[in-house]
Length: 386
Image (cartoon, rainbow, N blue to C red; front, side, top):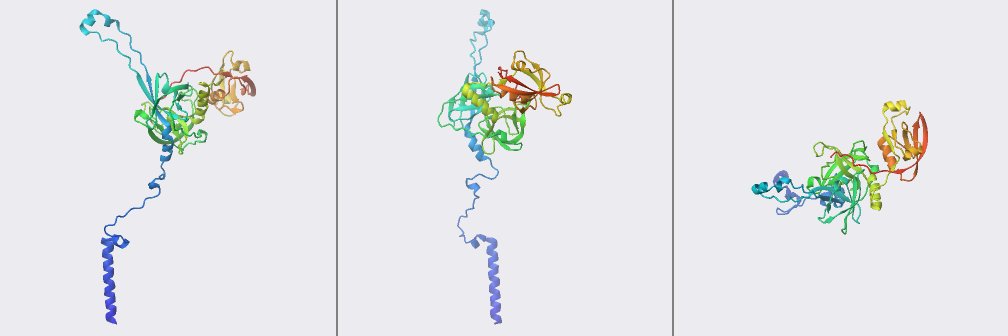
């Protein structure tokens, strides 16, 4: 019996030793794989074609086909022939150089297809004074574009091309955007080709920048460079929330402060341009300035708000309605006026020819006046920051 027990112990020891050697040198044999078998690693579900966690590739893929490159040309007039070139002595020694032909200058920007019928949104300064406009799509197709209309005061323009099966972008809601939201800027910076950059919404309602007459910008740190003008600012779902228009930079390259026109403004301007070829805005004919803290205390406003009327032009709706210099405009049709910029936007939103009620602070008392809104005269385009 003792011999059998010793034999069992020796056998078990040898088996354990063999298993240890196999587990150390050839663990694959323990998994049932033959020495020549090919082991295929399992891929996660997202690596097999789905969206990776944290990736914005779906948003970019959705929006990129609708973003186009815009190339403009502008003829440069030949310089007048210098009288010295007609001197026989000069021509004897130096010959006749002849006329120098005019060379066209070129410019580039970006645009966004907003309708399958061929309407494209871009910046007014991209196509300003252009003699020719060519649009290049993401699918390599090209087409000559015509200008439907421009609005320099918001720096927006609508173009039209004639091509079939155009991919149109989906509009989002800039009013629901919040500071910290992830956004993508899509365009053609420096002419290198379509490029996507990522950032966040840095601020909302930016104004008093001196870029456009009507300012209500989305500020973003997504890289925007020359050539991005007129391109799309989209949310994490690939929906258009703004048109990239300017950067704050002394070098011409992105420093992390870019501005986009919100889609709420874009829609209003675009619809009017497509319908009438231009934008009509309300106007009452006054000069205004922001109310300072000292003014607020003097007028007993309780807070810094409203727009001080500094001038009333003669023969304007404001004069006929009884508005006086020194009044503080605090409301337009029941909507509060925060400052001169918001006052400008509220008045501009009124339909020319319609009647509007304005709330004023006069001699520490609130009064209401009724005015017939006029049509805003054309204004010169503001200086830009890019």
